[in-house]
Structure formats: C-alpha cells, structure tokens
Image (tube, rainbow, N blue to C red; front, top):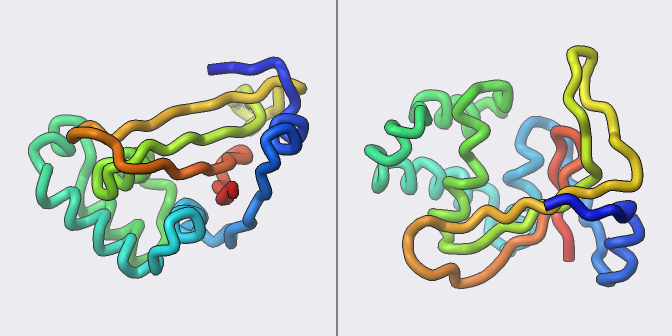
Length: 147
C-alpha cells in the first residue's frame, strides 16, 4: 500500500521510534531480534528449522536451503533465497510483519526515493492465525526495528 505522506511524519504521528540495526548483512535479523526480544542465534536456527518443517512449500517457491545456510552463516544477503527470509520468519514465529518505508524506484544505477510517498507492506504467516506483529522500517535495502 502506498501513502502520500513522508515517512518521518508517519513515524511522528504514530509515536514510533526507530531502533537502528547494524548494516552488516544481517540487519533484518537484528531488527527482528529487537522487535521480538529473541537472541539473533535463536532466530538463525529458527529460519532453518522452519525451512525443514515446510521444505516442500519453500522448494516450490524456489527457496534454496543452502542459500539460507550461507546467509545465516556468513551474512551473504545477495542470494536469491534471502528475499524469502521475512516470509520464513513470519511463518516460523506465527506473526504478521508490517514493513514501512519511503517509496523507492529501483533503477539501473540503484534505488531512488520517490519523495513524500511511503509504502507499507504486510507479510502474514501462512499457517494459521497470527499471534502477534513485528514492525520494521526499510530504507532501500536496510531494515531497522520500530517501537
């Protein structure tokens, strides 16, 4: 969903604080950890455990376990399967994630902000009822936690 409102104004209106995550390839995991209070190592293990429990579904979606292992082990976030990590986390923890951020156009020379337009993405777990929510801010390719 797109909203014609600058992201900073949205955050102020809803009294949301940004909790910065390190930008070393695992920013999504650090942000998830800050939002849930779970240790990053547990989150890494849960990604692989969730994949194993529902491997047929993830394989059908083109998610490769070896790529997830590489991401978890060495922060290689440029692998195709890493795009599914947010969905895997939502399924593993039975939560709905809301990702808010400035809208970007992705061009050959990199992401370019659209300006005064924000995007909100909702990612639901696909297995039963969601038991909670996680709020994240995405800036280009970086994730931070919101609270």
